[in-house]
Image 1 (cartoon, rainbow, N blue to C red):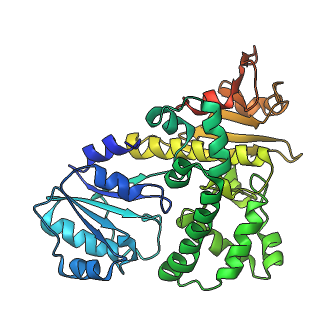
Image 2: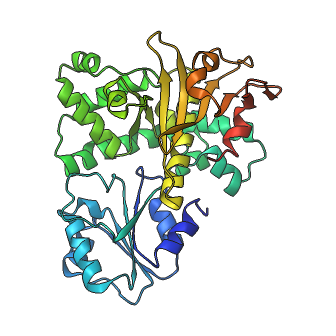
Image 3: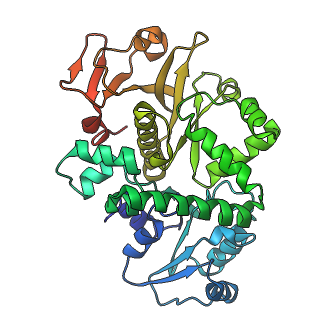
Length: 376
């Protein structure tokens, strides 16, 4: 499969080091190896390859050097800066990893001005339509809701295979990556934290409530959640407020990169899927085009909400409500009319027989259609 970032990465490899991050097993290494037939692949997890890194003895006759999981090397950014400053990008340098390489604490010296960052996400309906061309978008949406968008289980299409893959996937992150990168050993407590969040997807999360449930401090819970974000297990969405600092103090919501992890009802699964698709598009716009979009939700003091609000350069740009079967306009669009004035307002519905638009500007769109073609 030719992934959605392929051409942009190819073009930028001629200019900068490329840092390609994303969830474990979302297809980073496969994408990297498909960029050229001439590459040397070095994986930090391999003892033999660590010696190659220490000696800097890769094959410089190859077009691309792929350095996988390099972020596990102590002071890896300082090491990579030294390589770049000494040798440039002949051969081209592509660094892949299953942690957020721009935020991890073991950063060493800055690579400022020497790299471009790309974030690869699992498959969504838009990418599935473009590269797999399914006969039925609705069936593809159902598979995403059930199995998530990680390439291997999605293409396998089996619930039994996915359940085994899901357990193995999370075990590697918790019992190997967390210990290697953050020296965290309270694995069973973090597993419980993840289980609690699976049941609360799309709901406001109280740090103090989680702290009471797990019998740890608020500070510890926040630390674990940041680590899980950096490991691409889940991501946080904050409520929108023109005062961003005030917004960040409010209770957030958490969503999973792996949609199959969500244990709530079908509505929660659909909301998580939409959150993943929106974040993927926002990251693509930032990484490929340098455009600034951000993802929030809207909530007032009376508890009324708009599921998602995308801002462009800090200003409201797109409001989105997500429904399973309701084809009547959500009253929440009217409640937040002052904030949403003049912007695109979409209500996407999974089970919808007819798409509609209203004089108010609200559009009601079939989820499988809208998710397969939207752009910002």
